[in-house]
Length: 423
Ligand code: GDP
Ligand code: IMO
Ligand code: MG
Image (tube, rainbow, N blue to C red; front, top):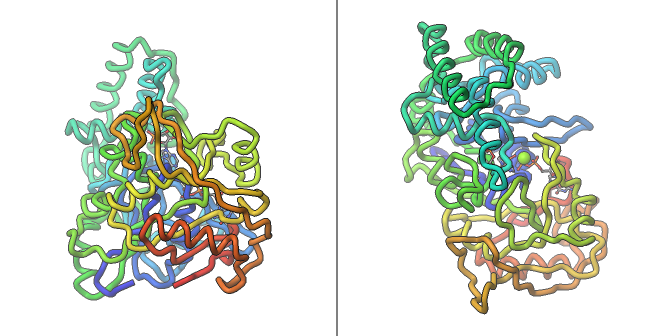
């Protein structure tokens, strides 16, 4: 953490790496925590003192009462879901209204965007992206098409603007022959959410950040999704619709590249993916089922099975380079505690071609593995690196050497306390 800088914590694989947990752990060191991309497609889990929260749009720095949290311009926000999430935190005793600032430039997800999300998925047949159904793609599409509504729009003549956009959506849905939907109740809550949002500071968060950085404050940018779901660099078209990489921090918060400090890349000791799309390390056998069971790999947003496999060094090397990762954080190490051996994917192969570089079309590639001994030790109670069993230390050394980047934090359980610093 450096004064006057923005550090970024980014998921560098397919999301759900444990970003929420680590942002929560890091928050005491920072003045401001800010989300720069995505919306309620995210599900960030935070567990401490026997309490569990799953955050979608609200940054994971919110549990540190003294800190300002920002929903940046690069985010998309659904007022009804935001209201439900914020009220849950308020009911748990957290005061949000003064310290959760929302960018007027963030874009609004309408109820009809969610219907469009379902309609586009239905029209895709076999090639469904497997979206979270939160209206992410349709909202970001309209942002690019310059037909969307922003948070700032709720402050003036909103009813007309809303009615016009909704009716455009209804026409598109009619054209798609997707008319069997009823948003009456959803819309009621959504409009209530719009009013509720007005009780929060809706600000030019970009300017607020410029002033804070100039005054020497430190900012932590919290990623959502992961590098392989990035709209440009992920496994397109099986991706989300935002810039999840470090470049997205600049565009999604309005901060300059030279304001960026450390870039923490977070990954699991193995791999997971929710939704469709290529996943060369996917295990379809009992080993994959065992990882899913022990790791509780079911989506925090949709409850879907997460697809599981061994760690993927091809994807990690690509993500480290794309993001300029300076430090790695390895999560869920404890999930591999009982395995006799651990594998790491070091290359992909297809039709006699072997590559260590992320291919343009990741479809149809098979993983090439190296195998390492398991540590067969319960890591969950460990508190310091000098307690690590040798085989676990060897796994860390192996990854650090292959990835040419230090692993400075290791997580051995879901609780805030189960986080070990190696720095
Ligand atoms: P995020 O989207 O990156 O914030 O991650 P999610 O919250 O979607 O998924 C991570 C899941 O792993 C959550 O259920 C966490 O409680 C859990 N978790 C985080 N770190 C660890 C860990 O080190 N070990 C175990 N067993 N679970 C963890
Ligand atoms: P966090 O922040 C894992 C996936 C969806 C789908 C694709 C597109 O919790 O890590 P979308 O609804 O964004 O249009 O879906 O992206 N996806 C995620 N997978 N973690 C996430 O967020 C995700 N957000 C979206 O499953 O495959
Ligand atoms: Mg998640």
